[in-house]
Each structure stands twice: as structure tokens, then as C-alpha cells.
Amino acid sequence: MLSKCVARVVAIRGVARDSLLRSLHGGQLVAPKRMSSSGGHDPYPVDKSDPEDAASFFEMVELYYDKAAALLEPNLVKQMTGPVEDREKRVRGILRMIKPCNRVMAVTFPIRRDNGEFEMIEGWRAQHSDHKTPTKGGIRYAKDVCADEVKALASLMTYKCACVSVPFGGAKGGIKINPKLYSDYELEKITRRFTIELAKKGYLGPGIDVPAPDMGTGAREMSWIADTYQQTLGHYDMNAHACVTGKPISQGGIHGRVSATGRGVYHGIEMFINNANYMGTVGIPPGFGNKTFIVQGFGNVGLHTMRYLHRAGAKCVGVLEWDGSIFNPNGIDPRELEDWFLEHKTITGFPKAQAYKGPESSLMFEKCDILVPAAIEKCITKQNAKQIKAKIIAEAANGPTTLAADKVLREKKVLVIPDLYINAGGVTVSYFEWLKNLNHVSYGRLTFKYERDSNYHLLESVQKSLEGKLGKTSGSISITPSEAFEKRMGGASEKDIVHSGLAQTMEGSAKQIMSIAMQYNLGLDIRSAAYISSVSKIFHTYNEAGLTFT
Image 1 (spheres, helix red, strand yellow):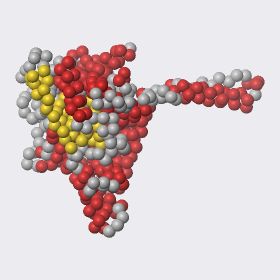
Image 2: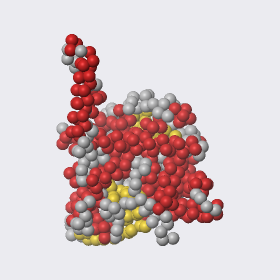
Image 3: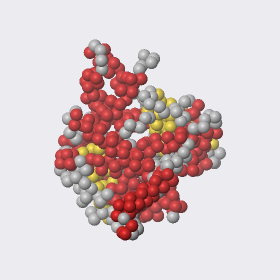
Image 4: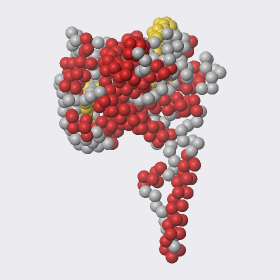
């Protein structure tokens, strides 16, 4: 049974993610970001005359930052001491420090292909902020990776970590290859060489910069990175395996990491959908009961989000993929769809749903309560935001909504739960894995037996107390634990602790965001509230640490 579960996870992490993010077109594997299976047009066009819609990914993140910083600045000035002019200068100066990427490294190196040919490989690693160390962010393998993309994702990681109070700065890396076109041996050579380049230049280490899986990479690549670092520059470092997260369990990984982002998305939606004030504003009753949802992207995040929402009582009516979409108003079972996908490597043809007629992107415009974009950035634009009928949009992907589209959605009374909060489950559990590696002991190992024995002693104590109170005539009294308590009597496993910690993190962060939204009278502008929460924490870190070299 365990081996089957592992096989399912590996298949979904690899096959589903890769099939979602790349497509076979014209004999070449290419990224399907702006390609429809029904034609060569852009399925998510932007208004090029509107800077807030046409901005690049990095510019888009900076625009969101600027908006939050402008709202936050007056309050920060009030919190400072000293002459007003000096306070204003210090606040503006620190806010200007936070915004740009601290550094971006570009590397080019050769590899010998299996056929004897030589090829030059390009890669980047961006470190956005050192307000907390190490910096943290994934490494992706994709043909469309560029400096702008890694800078955008690194800056978003900074704000994401701060939003959920994970003590990392933001980073991101990428190699400009399509992993489908390389053998496993070639990918291992590329990964290990890139690891050496990162380590030599100060972009890798347990206390410096800690990568994680991303598009086109997984536990296998993270294991190669950890091994390469440990065998070379990290040879004398007992914490060497903490240089990367998302590793296999045997290499120091952690239970619950695979489903972490999707589980975090579920908890994020849960916090807002159970809030009567927000649901009253968007016009639907609180709770998951009788709610419908559509998922864009059936990769790792989309699958696990679908699973948890289904278990909570919501009904999936549509799944959108690059090579086709399916629709069933009566509901789609995530396990059955997963089984079909693993066998056929596509969701098309799934017998318990009908093929969606029309462009895949149009499925996002069907009536539902919750829309979960879990695939690509900038898929919700000024032009198509007007057609979205969902009342809640949960940004499981990074940067799916342009600034112009965000305004349109708020005017329509649509609640957008932003990416920097709702998809932070992955980095939260990566933090737990990093701590596990530094502690050199798995969660629960030191307390598991003690907790189990304590619970049995508790039941025995209750039994003896009742028998003593009621007297010997009543005979022996049997204490039967409830089903829920019986499941927990054995103590918390590592997976239990990870799930509990993730739920607590998402709950606490949501409460902070809601409080800020109320304080600044932001209404449904949850994104600005989340950015204010993040930027405020980063500001105070810089301010209280002092500015050493200025």
C-alpha cells in the first residue's frame, strides 16, 4: 500500500506538473503560457495600452508593492520617534531598500549531451532580500525562464515568507531548459553543475540560500543538490543537507511536503469562506456546503486543492488544462480524475465529465462560487476579468491576476485571496523541513511514546477515581475513549505536527490580514492588506537591526 501511495505522489508531482506547464506543439516541447490547444492565439490577452495590465511579471509585483507602501508609509512615520523630517526620510529610505532585488546571478556553462554534442546552459538565481537569512525560493527548469521572471518570483517570495511569518528572505532560481528534452543523466549533470556554480558564488548553503522544487523539478533534483553540496563545499558542514528543501524522506525530507501548497490553499479559503462579513459582501452564505469550484491546472497544487475542497463538502464542476477542459455540473471526483490522469497522462476523455466546448480559457467564466487559478501568471487580465462569475478567487498560482484585473474584480464584489498568502503552504512546510534538518531529529520522535503512555495513564486515573467515588459495590468501571481521542492517543506523528503547524500558520496569518484590512478600511482589497502585513514586518526588521553600511 505504501509503495502504491509513493508511486501516485511521484507520478502526480512529475507527470501532472510537466503536462500542465508544457505542451507538445509542432514537434517541440514548449511552454504553453500563451497558447490555446484550439489555435495559436493568446488565450489571456492583456490591454497593452494600460500599464497596469501590460506590466511584466516583475513590474506587476513592484506595482502591488508600491500601492501597499503608499498606504503604509504615514503609519510608519507616526510610529517612529524624533523630528518629523528625519522620520519621513528614514521611512522612505527603508521602503526604497525593500523594493529592489539585492542581487541576481547569471551563469552559463557547457554540458556534453549523450550524443557527444556540446550545449551551453543558461541559469539564474535572484536573491531579493537579506532582511532574514537564509533566502528561500524554488529552482525551476523551463524554456521560458528569464532574469525578469526569477526577480519577480524572488520578490514575491520575500513578501510571501513575511506574510506567514516564516523567517526567510526571498529568492528564486531557474535554468533555461525544457527537462523533457534531456535524459536523466543529462539532467543530473546540469543540476550538479548548477549547484557548484551557486555554492561557489555564495548562492547556496543552510544559512545562506536554500532552494526548493518548482516547475520542472522535484525531490530527485533536490536530492542531487543536497548530495553535491555535501560532497563539495559543504563537506565540513554537519548541516549540509539543510541547504535545500523538498527532498525525499530518506534524504532528510519531511512528511506532508508534497501536498503542502494545496493544503495551504484549502486552509486559506476556509478562513475567508467561514467569515460572515466577507461572505455577506460577496453575496454567498458562509461555509463550504453547496459551494461549487473550478480549478485551472491539474498539477500538484491543483490536484491537492481539489482533494481538500472536495473533502470539505464543496463540489468541483470543472477542470481547465492546456490540452482540454472538462465540465460536469453534478461534480467531478478528484480521486477518479487522478486515476484517469495517471493512466492516460491527460484529463481529456474522462468518462464522468463532458469535454468543455469552446476555448479552454472560457471555462473560467462559467458560473461557480470559487475559482482556483493554479497554473500560470497573468491569466486573469483586464479584458477577461469582467466575464468571471466566481465570487471567490483563490490564487494558488503565482501572479495570476494583473493589477488592472484586480480593480475590475473588486468593483464586481469578487473576493480575491492573494497568492502571497494563500499559496504560502509550500514554503511554510519547507521551513519545517529546514528546522528538522538543523535539529537532526524528526518531529515527534522524542515525545511520541511519552504522549502515548501519558494518555493511557490519564484514562487509568479517571477509571480509578470513578471506582473510588462510587465504591466497590459498583464493580469495575470501563473507560472507553471517543473515536477522535483514540486516534490521538498514540501521540502526534511528524505528519500530524506538520499539518497542525500549517493550519495554525494559515489561520494566524489570515487573522492578521483581516485585521489590517479593517484598520485601513480596504474592504475586499485583501492583496493590499497582505502586502501591508508583509512590508510592515520587513520594515521593522530593517529598522530595528540598524543600517550598518549606510
